[in-house]
Image (cartoon, rainbow, N blue to C red; front, side, top):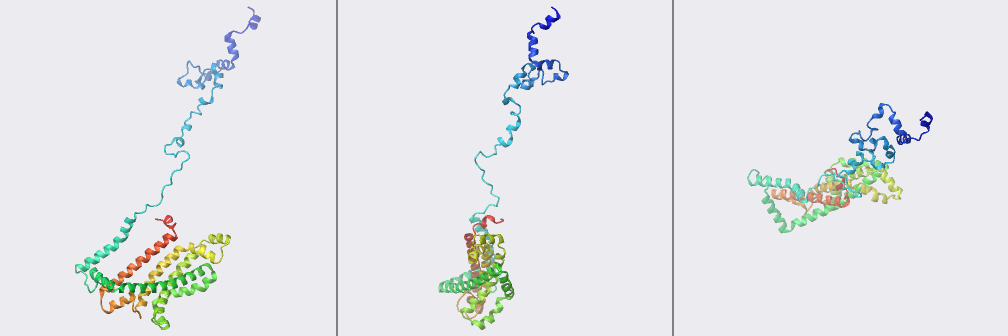
Length: 360
């Protein structure tokens, strides 16, 4: 066969396959780098050659048509990320309940037991000291003698009458003094002119002990009920003014401006915004006023009185009855405890949110 016949002869199957696959011819004539595992034939490939990338050149066209599901990018570890398959993750559509950040509250029985533990220890020490003879009855009457005096007052009905008389005087005095102090504190806290007119006088009044006014009030009002109520009112007006003034000055200015933007002015602004915001300070002032009123009550009932706890103290002093003296002290202590419990109840009703924002 001549050279021309060879050139015109039909291609053999091997040559046709070589001509139909340029990639095969290029791989046959490629430099030694073509012998990398990525292009070796399936007969000599390592076990990883089972992936589509390691197939032979004869199936190169099949690689191009392979589905994307078998791609290594789909089977990469990113699909099985711990953020998706974590067992602690909440189910879709459900929210985890928030964790309580505050300290757990004690049970009411435990809290009550803790509160009364110290007073009970003091009573036990008092009982032991007087019962063992370490404390003379002339110095301090024992619990038995005090209970006997209490029984005498209850049997004669004097205890109830004395308590009602003292409660009436203290109530009227605190109502008058607390109301005046609250009004002055609000005016001085809201107005610069009010502060300039009221605050200097109230500061001077606070520096004067109210017991120093007793002789002056006796000359003005005598020794009747008016004197007693006025003395208690003067004792209560100072704390109420001071705490109300601080509470009103502590109201956020933006809150007042927002209320004015909604049309609240004058008394409606004071009663609807200022007073409720300053309520913690006002209730603290009320607690102090009631405590101070007991001091004024003792001073008032020891002058020209025929009934009351202060009058009972005067009688015990005249007759040297230490049991009645100790009984009056215990009555004042119980009254102070009841006042504190009452104010706490008002705080829980008027400000129920304070239990959730407290530090402890």
